[in-house]
View 1 (cartoon, rainbow, N blue to C red):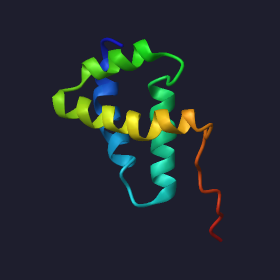
View 2 (view 1 turned 120 degrees about the vertical axis):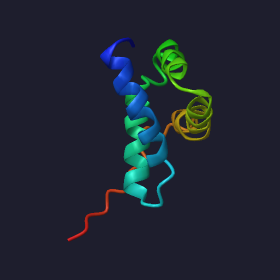
View 3 (view 1 turned 30 degrees about the horizontal axis):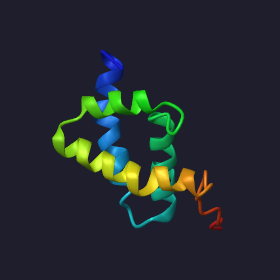
Length: 89
């Protein structure tokens, strides 16, 4: 990721990390799924490492925590998606 793509990732990744901490289940699950897709996990660990290099120390730590705590665990457990599919009418 370089140029404009890197700038987008620098803005997007912290926002998605914050979304994984929301109380709203749908926001949290959507943020987790988006992070997994953006970071190409678990398929492309090299790209994930590249993204980590774009962030400052605090951002790297927060992203690393989310990846370890949520994203890798969900894949290991076979839970690709953990969405709340409840419809509100």
